[in-house]
Length: 108
Image (cartoon, rainbow, N blue to C red; front, side, top):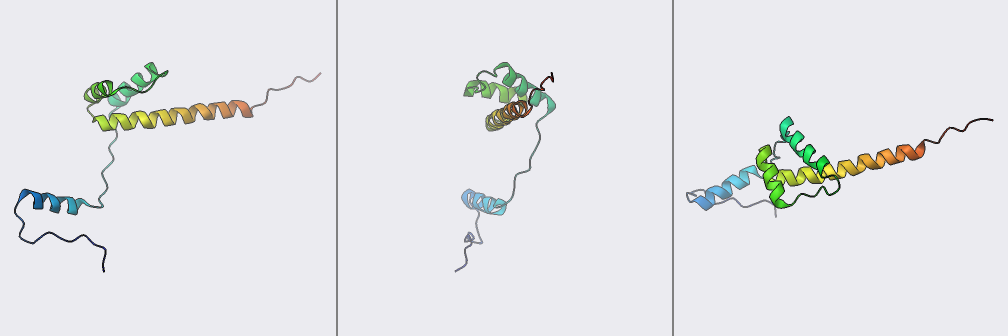
């Protein structure tokens, strides 16, 4: 038995059927990735750096940032999650580089 989604009836005029057809036609399609504007990145980075001690904005702040940047609340949430991860990784790399460097000893 093939593992496929059954198609709706051929004569489908109501809104539900048309929505099902639309969903089926988009199944498996990837969303296009779009970069944020430079201004949006500047706004988000500024907020992140100003609140580096607690870079977890609440939903009301995220909504304000989303409006200011012209992006969605979900995009702001994802940006902060990714930024925190990348920031921690860069901090750890800096610590590792410092630990690998041994101080030069003066010869006597």
